[in-house]
Image 1 (spheres, rainbow, N blue to C red):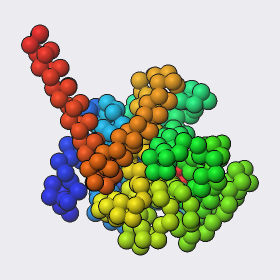
Image 2 (image 1 turned 30 degrees about the vertical axis):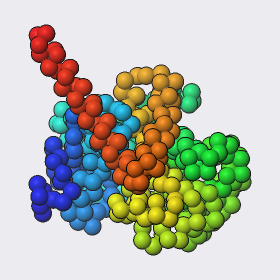
Image 3 (image 1 turned 120 degrees about the vertical axis):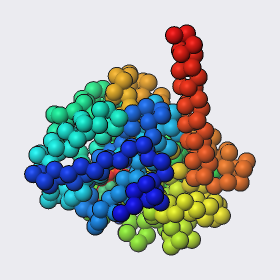
Length: 366
Ligand code: NAD
């Protein structure tokens, strides 16, 4: 297995492979970049078919966090971890404790949060051995409601704000009354997004692989149930994928009828150039790592102890970031995904330059 010459390696600062035979823990921690601050990112548990698959996933996700945090103007670096194993069969308290000890050994360079296959209680178990877990503190949430640390409400709110910015840009309207939105995946984020949209007067179509999740949106929000085959291709204004990645691809893009794609799922584009394919069809794509940054913003402030108003204001900034991306895309003719990457790199460089000049100034004074 190649590491330094891996196609996704991209100058990662740190990679550690951790094995604990007693508990069956096999984990990889990837820290892409810490120039803006400690690397914060989810700890995913997944039954990867091979070590190579796990390595590729962690490297891609970790770099993605550098970009997401820079674009969201957070003093955080990018990192991610994966535990190789089936969370329904192989997760145990002992395994999570062993992971906590490994996180502690990294000295705070990487901070883990929940991700697919892990939950707030799992992170709390890891937290018995380390402070380097996030999204676990009970506090007043950004919405003024008590929170257990779960970032999903902030992610859903940020996605709603970003969706509104996309509607304003593409359809020229502020009012969402009667706006038709199809949501794929009615889980933690998808259901909350649906609720915000319903409250704003939108009409909803929903699909989830679990019938009870879908039924809840039908019963509580008056949504119309759709099928797995149809959900992305309904004649609606907005498609909001909130389940899994790679749903925007060579097969799906030609069949989309919506004029906007704005959803919370990570890695929506199967290939980077699929943003161009969306642009060619006149579809406005809200880049996933811009629109779904509410959760990382919320988790960041858990560590600084900011007020709910501060968190909410920062999450609301997702709308401004998207507006900037859309305007630059129109001006340059480049697709929105490319622009989002450029803007993230710009914000990253600006921050690093500021820190460097501060260090130089301090050195002169000292
Ligand atoms: P979740 O597991 O609570 O919800 C996902 C939902 O999608 C589940 O109800 C699941 O049954 C459904 N689903 C799975 N496969 C599906 C399919 N093929 N078709 C339709 N539905 C399907 O997860 P979540 O926390 O709501 O996150 C949703 C997405 O947003 C994920 O891609 C996640 O990575 C991303 N995201 C979440 C957060 C967060 O704060 N939770 C932050 C950033 C990004």
